[in-house]
Image (cartoon, rainbow, N blue to C red; front, side, top):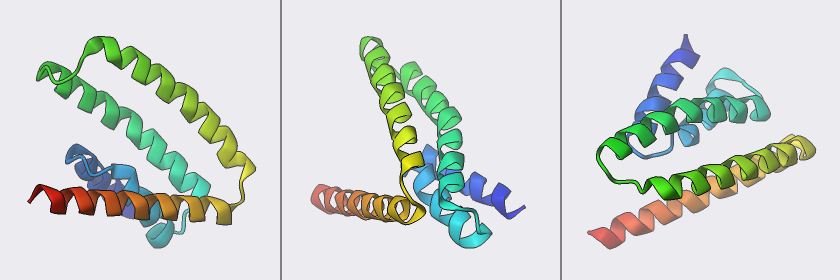
Length: 118
């Protein structure tokens, strides 16, 4: 049941543009005891419908250029496959370190851009 509520919070965060996996992955690990690779896999599976809905909403609002979507999607799919293969080669400690560093960097960028806009 806890995982269900975490996925709801993750979906709300994704809908607000905050990145649902950034909330879901650490929550699954810390609150549910899910291993790093499984939590990241869940985050990726949750990203697929969130990305599809977000793309649909933004296309209806005419915020996207359809010609660019193909190339963005193709490059995203290729690099996701490469990243998944890399994740299987890394230890759990390395995955946690990389994910933590990435999360801190993204938080710093969001904080800096948020402060800059005010």
